[in-house]
Image 1: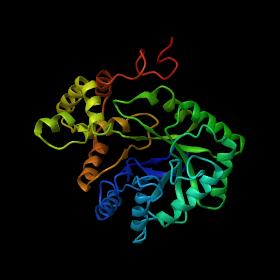
Image 2 (image 1 turned 90 degrees about the vertical axis):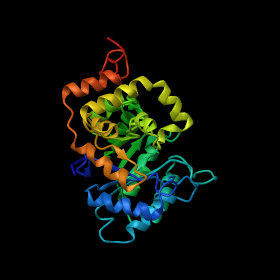
Image 3 (image 1 turned 30 degrees about the vertical axis):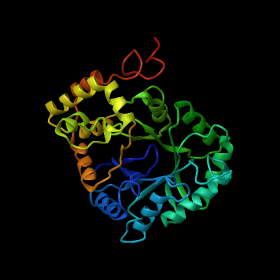
Image 4 (image 1 turned 120 degrees about the vertical axis):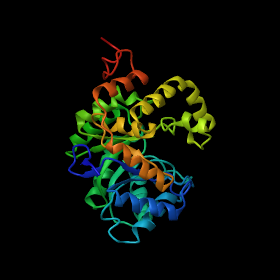
Length: 330
């Protein structure tokens, strides 16, 4: 396993993140335990979850599964860089959603209880809260750090200017601020290259891509359909996306075959080659899916291959692979 620092922090994390969103809704607790054990065996030390995962309001289904796995001991918690999130609704009463100081305090304590631990390594805002001032957010987070409940803080689904706003507010408080940003990023969805990635690099924020295979559309969906295999990319929304990008996906799968690699492995490997990316999130439903994702770490892409992928899935903006404003201006 390869390791890197999370953003500008001194925290060492694996170059793949184990996403746990399927634990509970799609994957049984027993199988989830097996996947987490296997992740450690392969050197993956970075686990990502959220208080809303499990999708039963207020129950924290996935966090509870992870917590019961930690409770087995054997160094499971000590070997894990644990990331969780808050923002989404955990109840029907006011102040059980978003990023008020009250919800931050309550949500952190509830996650700690479910996860059966006394600290969270990386506490992430699941979305930007446009109505809560940064002074309030950073003050509440600083209290959690002072209490030893949280070590690092991150964001998710932020725009580039949100990252700048957050970091400048933290700087004014002499606070470390964000060390990570979790964004949707894959060959089909490259919008963060315009401003989020440049802002993250400038501020030393590690980028953690979610949906690295765009809900399965980059995992060989057309090949699987031809072979009659099951695929995640066949629900109505994904089917519409697939038809919209069919030509590009066909070219992509053909190119992967020419390279002798699986399309899923190629998609993750491409992310690992992007400047500023710390580690993509892989969210396996099965042990086989986890073990398959490890192949991406062995793939090295040369300049010609990266250029070909840019031709199949062009960067956003009319001016090629350039950040804003050059992407759309002179």
